Amino acid sequence: MSEGLSVSLPLTLDEIDGPYRINKKLSEVAEQNLKMIILTSQGERVMDPNFGVGIRSFLFEQESPFLEDEIKNRINNQVSKYAPFISIGEMTVDMDSDAQSLSLHLVYSVPSAGIVSELTIPVSA
Image (tube, rainbow, N blue to C red; front, top):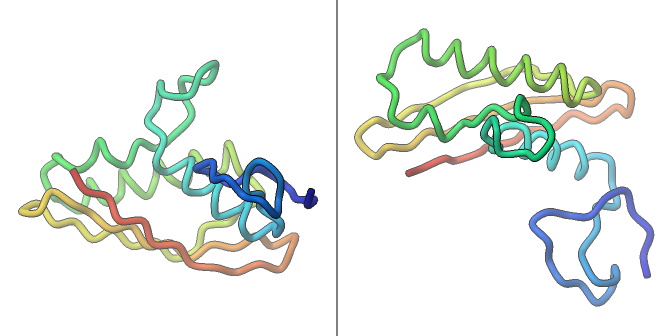
């Protein structure tokens, strides 16, 4: 059985790591935490109803500069509260109202570990 930092989500059977695949690098844990914060809707996490950005809830909103600012503010607030070790750099939101989809692109870092990475999250209805 391998040693690691956390279980990798979604749960995936793995003969090498043990029953489930695990995250072995801090960069994997940081990316997974960031995804969970962004994709989880508020009220979805048991015992912490304030956790999550709920990015899917923005799919049917009218496109505007204010909406993009709201998404960015919500992400920054949630990350500073639930993953303060992650620093968000550049963030872009590309919305496509016709296709009822959006794409979120982040450049983030974990300064204490010298990690700089990028993450793109496509969201659709």
